[in-house]
Image (cartoon, rainbow, N blue to C red; front, side):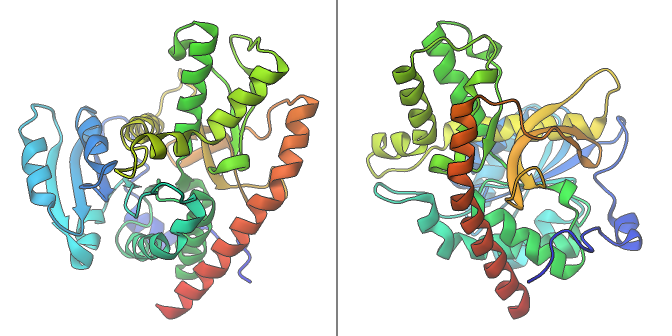
Length: 347
């Protein structure tokens, strides 16, 4: 098995040649959206088009990107929109990108779990990893494609096999779990959700999603029954949307909002500010638990992860929930590493 912590840094010569994600505050940025025509991709591209620091917004999908690009190009914001299609267009879309965000892949339908998507969506992850290694190994990669718990280890393993893996630059986007937690807690406490803050750790499916309510600000004051119901709702929120859409899609608008928030934070990190500490939760290469990948709060900087803040303080129930979900998460990670090794050998 490949050791994910040995030899993981990009070679200095290659990184020097492709170091597009490490500039100062005066530099403009290229952001590529892979899966830009889908239910998440279109609203995500719309939100990113509004960021004044993005000078080039590159859209990729299997087909129909021209129409989305034309529509977005009529918006009077700074970013120039370009579009690419198919396998041949992926490297062109990602070429010299500072950030690559990937909502591409099959969405869930009623009755499906995120794990059911591995067979189809692993190929998407593989193609993105190979393209990133070739044309933008210095980019920050933000993966939305489900199941995140498996997809991120797949990509990490392929990048490592290619000699372009930098653990500080690979993210599984779990921001939606934080966004949902803040929204639900804000409703419960009857406060502005924008004022709510708490860490959500672990993974991005079911019981692996662990909101740390004991560290919530303002203080969460629910009963034990209300607390259990809230945690379950956060963990099953994706299914709530899938069922509500009655077979017509999964969480797209809320995911696009959460992803754009995360990408905007990556941009703020790239730009750098001595007066600002940029903290986001994401699923990353980690040594804070037995799991090789784990979501915790991170401080972001010009090179991606500046510091992993590790596990927050937890009460006894949260510690027990963490121990309970770790075997599930480790199994998903092992599956991802195995698939990644197979795909790396096939290429």
